[in-house]
Figure 1 (cartoon, one colour):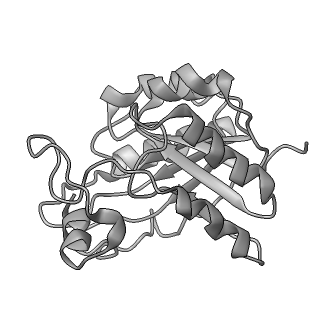
Figure 2 (tube, one colour):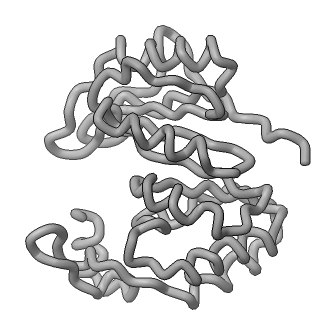
Length: 216
């Protein structure tokens, strides 16, 4: 929300809509931008693309036909790998069987604390080539997390003013769970006021494992 407000203030055209002031703020209204569909067609070299980082493709107010068009663009440019992350795991599960899933689309859900663990079960029902969990910012232990049918685990601390402290034991437990289940694991940062303030080593080394999609 802070970044959206800043982008609105400097005149960024994609951040001029206002949301409900009780729940969002200036520049934080949901808008769709179909003109952006043409952008990936101009990329020649293969890229890993994090789709829609400032919004959520599976927000309830995003039309299903618009989501289908997102998936169509991904399928039409197969040299790129597209990572889609959502907090709306229930909406994702409810529409998953009405979408054509490209092989180059990786699907993930955010799981910041134990309260969000039901999102993992929703993700398991999605026919994506790679399913991943983003535990960033990690705000508490994730005891009871069962990693079956999950291919990649991401963890990291919170950043920015008022950031909350990340407990090493929470991260190490996730690393152990991933290792035992054969799930690729990446630790992105400890966090701090600037994101990289605490570095990214975990017990003396960095963790940058990536999933290997099954052959299709």
